[in-house]
Length: 133
Image (cartoon, rainbow, N blue to C red; front, top):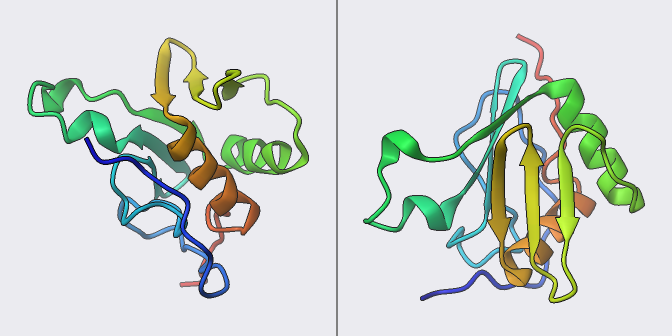
């Protein structure tokens, strides 16, 4: 099984517009088995790429967390300051793994996956910006 590992940052962070496909942190290992995010209008979708890469899983049952853009912005801001959000809850365990929970949906990440996500978040890669039409 391939693992997500943190790669050194070669360039400055690329800000994403509201119109994008799924993406991961530039610190992840080519997007293999990492936190994936997609901006879709006023919604932000989060999934676990290792779940969808397992042939035993059914794509129709893939767990995806969907939050509003304002909740996501608040979560990213609090994450960068080391504080927790009360609706999108990130719980980090002693081994560095993490669970991201919103309502009844929970996604679990390895230490490498979570570290890559945190590094990308601190670099501003998951900031949602609006591109004028």
